[in-house]
Structure formats: C-alpha cells, structure tokens
Image (cartoon, rainbow, N blue to C red; front, side):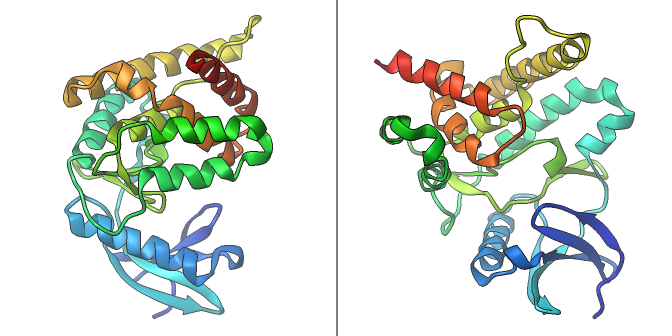
Amino acid sequence: MEKGKLLGKGLTAEVYEWGKDKVLKLYFNKFSNDDWVDHEAKVGYLVHESGIISPAVFDKVEINGRRGIIFERIFGKSILEHLVTEPWELYNYMRQLALLQHNIHKFSTNGLPTQKEKFTYKIRASSSILRGRLKKILDYMESLPDGESICHGDLHFNNIIVSGNKLVPIDWNGAYMGNPLGDVARTCMIIRPPTLSRVPDAVNMLTYYPRLLAYQVYINEYMKLAKAKYEDIDVWMLPVAASRLKDRIPGEKKWLLDMIDKRLEQLR
C-alpha cells in the first residue's frame, strides 16, 4: 500500500494517511532505528491491550529506508486545536483532562518501563546542568513511593484528540508504570506557567493568570477524583522538574533550576 496525504509532522516523524482508517507514523532518519521504533510499537500495543482508549497498533513497516508504525486513525482535532476557536471551553476541558488522567491511572500492565527508570534516564541526561545536584535528586526520588498505574508521561492538550464524544490520548512513547501522582506532577508543570517576573508586561499577565487558574481547576478536580492530597503530588515536583530539563523548553531552564534549588534547600 502507498502512503497517502501528509496529516502532520513532529520532531521525530511524519504522519500520513494509510488507507481509510489507519495512519502511518514514518520516522525521520535520525529516529528510524530499531530500538526507537520497536519501543514505541511495544508501548502502544501494551497500552491499547490494557483496555485504555488509545490508538491500536497494527504493524511495523520500512519505506525508502525509513521505519514506520501503522496505527489506528483517530478522527478529530486535538483539544488545543479546539481551544483556538473555543477558548471559553478551557476550564471545562481542564476538568475533562483530570477525569481522563484519573481513568488512565486505574489501569495496569506488564512490560512497560518503570517510572523511576524513566525519570533517572532523563535526569542523568541533564547531568552537565545539574552537576552537584544530581545525586541528591536521585537519592530523594528513590525515597518516593512506587505505584502500579499506567502513566502517559506527557499528557497535555496537544496529545488528546476529541473524537466524537470521546477523548483519546495519543503519543504514548513516554508511558511507564508507576505512581500516578508523579504523572500528575508532570502535567501540572506543563500547565502551570513559570513565575511572573517582578515587572510583568501586559502580554505576560494575559497568559499567566488564565494558565494559573486553569492549573488550579485541573489539580483540584484530580485531587477530588483521586481523593489525593496536594502534598502527595507536590513531593514529586523535584524529580519532575529535574527530568523536564532534558526537554529544553525555551524560557524554562532558569525557572526549573530555581525550583530545584529551592526544594533541595528545603530538604536540608
């Protein structure tokens, strides 16, 4: 079968139509290696087989020297795309995000990496930035409680498709098994804006306060659903902040390091 129309492009791959009800995720040469592709196919299969609503994995292919995976096609637009035209729905979607994530955390499986394995890899990848902080962070993380929940690892509005009356999370490559509150801490960090500067400009204020309120809606809804305490989520912020350094998000490095230093100081 020939690949169809290009549907989208990300950092690691392009996504093409593949027949009427499937898509081809075709990896760029840099990521078109057996380990990368086999891992994503395996994770996608395990998550779908666990019962979580997610794209089914059908096959692996090679096209012109590039590896790819055939997934079930999820028709619809991401929540982020919906919010461009329906910004007033932000807080409603925040509550739905919390419910979706809470439902994901009810599932378990075998064969996924563990949370602490994932975090350790990402934290060590930033050892040149963390320097003397590295061992303290890893030692602290080992003291945190383990868990047996499937965690998406990067759940946010661009990774959730609104398909009919369902929300379908996609891009499961970073999934792991572990404590769900560590997964919630990661989503909190994506939603919550960096600290407002001492002399904020109008643009920063217009984005800061809506994001802060959205974060509060999300975290309060999740805590209500999971009967969780904020303190039990907050203890994960240190390793999550350290692992997020690897993502190299523009404008976040100083914010993350300040957060890390503050929390390390509190451990003394």
